[in-house]
Picture 1 (cartoon, rainbow, N blue to C red):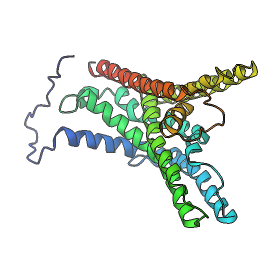
Picture 2 (tube, one colour):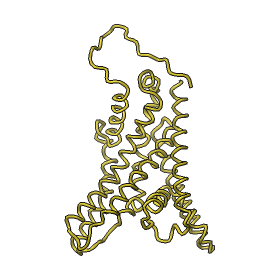
Picture 3 (cartoon, rainbow, N blue to C red):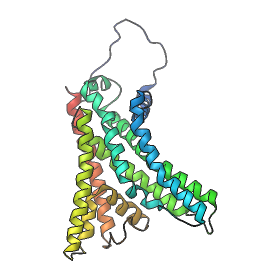
Picture 4 (cartoon, one colour):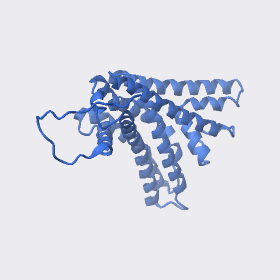
Length: 293
């Protein structure tokens, strides 16, 4: 694609003599603006209800687990590496409700040529939007995990604290945020209407999780225990669990007996990388077309 030659001309209405901060600051400003908007900051009170309600729901298992540990003086409640899989419905609703916000208004009001005039490029725009959504998804998962770990330290249970499992779960949170944000923003970018974007992302989650569960259960009922675990990889949450928690760090799977094949975590990692690359490619093609209008 040829380099953009668009320029904002000074036609003399009002001169600016301050410091010009350049491309990096423009991308950072766009990232911070998008991240604030994901949580409804700087928007109407109604826009804050869903994100902060979902943040509160994500905190419930951590608070309950701390209470159980304090009363029983032993490990209880949810395990660190199981947190995302157990709360996948909440994460999916947050992704579906907020991904369209990051991209739909710019497409609907056709302001992309203004963004791309100078100095922000298509790559800068996509990086800023993905970084904002990834940061939001990571915070949504990392905050309750950190609260749970701090609660475990304060309760002072017998034995060593589960620092290793906490760090593994935080590494997993990075990859959950990366994969889910790329998928969510890419799907939402194909429509300028936020309602359709929300429906598209939630339909993708429901379809993949339902197909994964039904297909694996069907294969198990037919006695095909070798093929059943592979069907689980259709679910993006179990895909990250297999690739990162089990494949890279050797942790226990979120669902017992799911990943019986030794090659499955490696294949899961390849699929995860391919999905991320496919999503970013789709975003680039989408925004090249949108910016040229």
